[in-house]
Length: 310
Image (cartoon, rainbow, N blue to C red; front, side):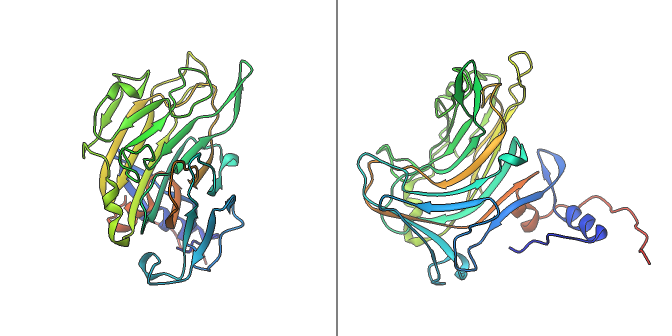
C-alpha cells in the first residue's frame, strides 16, 4: 500500500473522513503510522524498521509470486534453525519510541507452510523506565505456543499488570478459551474479558500453506502514580475475521512504565525443530484498523462545505 506523504488540505480532509470507522461505538479517525509490503524485493532499512538474523537464522524476501501473499512481488520469510535451548535468531522491529503513544493497532498476514512450532510472533514493548532503582518496561506478547501443548497454536495474550514493579513480562495471561479469568491480575474482576471463540486458534489452521490475517490492538492503562493509575487498558485479537479476545478495563503496566517503544515480529523461540514463518502486508496505525475502513466503511459524517481556492 502506497501512502501520500503530502496532501492538499482538501484531500487531507477527504482522506481522514473516508477512513473513519465505528470503533467501540464511536467515530475515530485512523492514522497510518507505517506499512511494509516488501514489494521492492528487499528488507526495509529505513523509516524506523530493522530486520535481522543471527546464529543460524536466515531472513530473506521471497520473490516467488506462487508463494507470496496475494501473488505479490515480495513477502518476508524467516527460517529458524533447530534449537533446544532457544534464542533470538530473527527479528523485525519497528521503533516508535519518539511518538510517545500508548495505544496502537497492528495488522499483518502470516503463514507457516511446513513444520509447526511456536515463537513470540508479535510483541509490543514499552519504553525502559527506572523506578526505585528497578529497571523495566511494559511488555505484551501475542505468541505461538512452544510449550508442547499444541506447538504453533495461539492460545493467549500474555502481559504484566505492574503488580510486582516496573518489570512486566508475562506474569498475567488472557486465555482464548475463556478459562481462569482471574489470571488477568489485579484488575480482576473489574475487567471485561470477552473470548467469543472460547478456544485457541489451533496449529492445524496453518496447514495447506495458506496465509492468515491477524489484527491486534494494545492500549496501555493510564496513570503515572499509584493514586492516578486506572484499569482502562485494552487488548484485542482477531484472526481471519474471528475475534478471539476483546478485553477492556485492565491494568497492563506499572504506573511508572513509559509509553510504547517498539513492535517486534519473529523474535524468540526454544525447544524447536527447524521451521519457517512468513509475514507480509504489515500495517501499524492509531485510531483503528485500516482494513476495517477499507473493507466495510461505515457512512462517514457529512463533510463541511469548503470554498474552492482560486
